[in-house]
Image 1: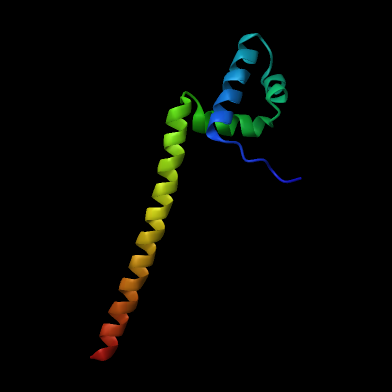
Image 2 (image 1 turned 180 degrees about the horizontal axis):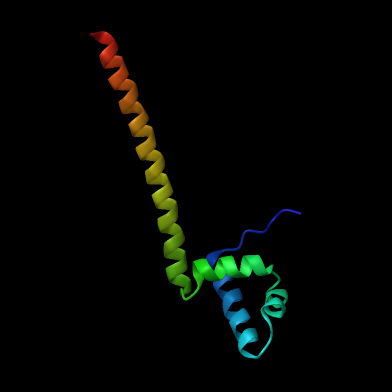
Length: 92
C-alpha cells in the first residue's frame, strides 16, 4: 500500500486534533488512531511541525525546496569548476 503524502496544512490540523484528544485524557495511541497515523509518524510530525502555524509550515517547506535547489546548483557548479581546473592543468 503506497504511503500518502500529507500537506503541511493537513499535518498541523491533525496534530491539533491529537492535542485535543490528549487533553481530554486519552492516550497517545488512541489519539494516533483517531487521526489515522502511526505513533512513529505522530512523533515525527510533532518534532517537525510542533508549535508551527499553517503559514509558517508552508513557508518552511518552500524554504526547504529552495535550499535543495540551491544545493544542487552549487554542486553542479563545483563539478564544472573541477573539470575546468583539470582541463587547465592538462594544457601545461
